[in-house]
Amino acid sequence: MRDRMKDRMILIGKRLKQARQALGYTQEQVAKKLKIGRPRYSDIENGKRDVPLKELYRFCEFFGRPLDYFLKEKLAVESGFKVLFRKTKGDREVAQIITEFESLCQRMYELEKIMEIKIRPPIPKDCEYEKNRLWFWGGHYADEERKRMDLGQAPVRNLDQILGERCGLKIFYLPIPEERGIFGMFTFDENIGGCILVNVNPTRGNQLFSLVHEYGHFIFQKERLGVISFEKERNTLDERLANYFASEFLMPENAVSDIFNIRIKNGKELGAEDIIYLADYFGASFQAMVYRLNNLKLLSDSKKKELISETPVGAVRKFMGMSEPERGKFKFPPLYFHLCMKAYQDNRITTSKLAEFLELPLYQAMELSRRIRRSTQDESADNI
Image 1: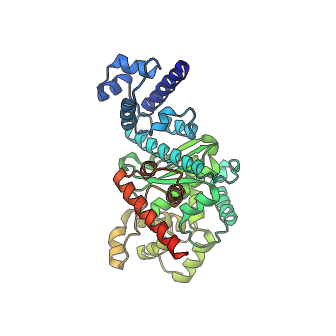
Image 2: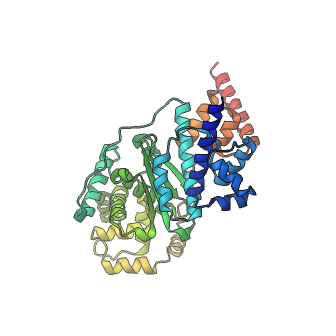
Image 3: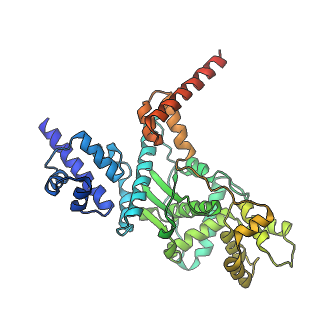
């Protein structure tokens, strides 16, 4: 019994240290913020002092971690997220976003275990490519992936669901402040597979491009374990390759050329309204569509610069009577909701656990559970 308690103290101390370092805090800062004596906090972190459950909940709230993080011997998603935390370079706000991302992935993994399913298709090795032919290899593998998933050349709808089912990717959406210049993140772990976070703040077209961009990191850079797609690093080899992949995957050359030839008169210089029409058709952003048309030699360099620098996209949309595609993407993927509901209906999780998974106050989870039970009872009655 004594040995078990000692092991628990050591584990909690180890997890506290990891959580603190991930957010860039010193022991003194944590102790001060939580109004705990520095020597006492140091003893807890070093496994020399036990932690009452009430105090452990305070640590959970402060570090943004679930209780299981401090009590489980082995975590499912540790290795890839350690790489992401190192890339924050002391930015606590970004580190807190990564903490939430990690928690979401951990919960998804837990749901899969509860439901006794393993959504883990065979994961291929990182695709090989030549550094001096990034454009070719990005397009080549994008075409290969479309063929593998039988997507043809048409615009892709519900791509996050497709990538979840066909590639086993865990995809979440969270807001990242614009000043951080981050479009998305990717991490990989042998236990859970690939995990993607998309910044929900940009336009819907930019969100979709970021999703495929991070998917490109899954295709090419799994061995890196963790990638943060910073705006300031967009010209690096890795980011350019992922952009080329995303461009071809979202806007296949043959499909773009066909629509261009059908809808846009030959010899006519493209206008902003043409770009918006094509962008909405393929689900891309205005900027991504401009660059794609330029790469395919369907738009001159001078017109590209003019459109990018001088087009008030919102005003043009308003003039055309076309609203901006809805940005709304909830943080949880559809599969996450599905597994939560199934686990509750099958009595595999309690109402309080349902509240934890869906990040709801307990009273809202209780109301949801009543609606679920009523719906189940109605279905049973209909089948009699």
